[in-house]
Amino acid sequence: MEDIIIIGAGIAGLSTAIALDKKGKKPFVYEAAAEIKAVGAGIGMGANAMMAFDHLGIKEEVIAHAKIIDSFTILDQNGTAITKTDFNSLNKKYGVSNFSIHRAKLHKILLSKLGQGKVLINKKVLKINQKKDSVTIQFNDGTETESRYVIAADGIHSQIRKSLLPKSTARYAGYSCWRGVIKNKNLTITESSETWGSAGRFGIVPLPENELYFFACVNGPSDNQRFQNYTIDDLREIFKNFHDPIQQILQQTKPENLIWNDINDIRPLDNFAFGNIVLIGDAAHATTPNLGQGACQAIEDAVILADEIQKNTDYRKAFVSFEKRRLKRTKFVIETSGRIGKIAQLSNPLMILLRNTFLRLMPQSVNNKQLQKIYTIDF
Ligand SMILES: Cc1cc2nc3c(=O)[nH]c(=O)nc-3n(C[C@H](O)[C@H](O)[C@H](O)COP(=O)(O)OP(=O)(O)OC[C@H]3O[C@@H](n4cnc5c(N)ncnc54)[C@H](O)[C@@H]3O)c2cc1C
Image 1 (tube, rainbow, N blue to C red):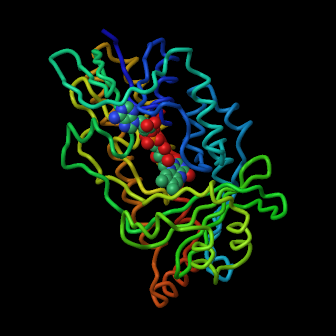
Image 2 (cartoon, helix red, strand yellow):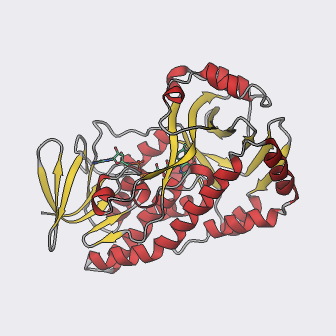
Image 3 (cartoon, protein in one colour):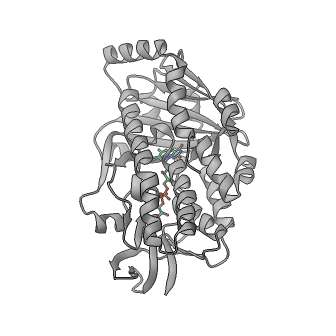
């Protein structure tokens, strides 16, 4: 029987495997996919995630493949600034910065830290059965394994969470999102921004090696067949009244590099610990991406769970202590991010005018307070 099995080789599962490895534990990761690869374009790593990477011993390697993000501007669709957040003063205080990185690069770094044979692929969990002192796991290839403890890192649609809490399903936020990465050579964009207009929202994040990551969020019904079939030209039409260089970015996007998905979160849970099973990452606290914190919280989970596991010989107690340290913070992220999304996706021109006027008058200290809360972590 294994001691600890992690289900899911996403950012949460891999980070936790690294964190446990560092504590001398020997977890195995079981992944449904036939290949370990990142789905998505770029990703923002907040200063809190960088502090967590420091604990995992990989901060410098991540920085070597990332781009520092020292400001974030919200613009109206004409390109006039609504607010600008300067991260420099906070970065000085906490000694770390925000970064952006290509997801594929981040995944490669995480995977490289785990020994050969630590991640098993083609192992989709179908069913788990919790016994008195262990958990049996059934996979779709007909095999079964037993582990004393299971860490469920199987994402927002977590099979394991659904078996423990059948009512906890993904909640659609009301908007869909397209993402892509292009070469940034002729555009030379150095700052990250979001443009909030009546037709939708367009985000731009510079990446290393002259690349740029963009996302485009548009209101509409969930699982929309029309959205699913959207082409670059459809997006160009939606964002036709938005400032430069949004059209140029879309024009330069290769159709095969366009990724689409609905934006979902889950209602904050009351528990992450269920006897010998614990939920982490999106399986525990999936959030909308408006704060850029989903993966950052998953990386924090890794450090805190490993810390609790080291402190407790009975991991059931470790899981409960982990839950205590994580519930409030991840609830704050889910709720704040959800609220920001609603404000950012306003489409009524009068409401947009009111919002933009209000935000222009809002002192930077309000934003800083929120950032400080995110930067302040208990490890
Ligand atoms: C548009 C968008 C932009 C985002 N931007 C940011 C950002 O800038 N910064 C940030 O911090 N976060 C961001 N996020 C959130 C971030 O992507 C997620 O929070 C993060 O990837 C969650 O990682 P995870 O490992 O918990 O889950 P996942 O990445 O979903 O990984 C789960 C893994 O489990 C596997 N799996 C699933 N079911 C099973 C099963 N039954 N058996 C075995 N394996 C299984 C899956 O194949 C997958 O590999 C964004 C999200 C979106 C949608």
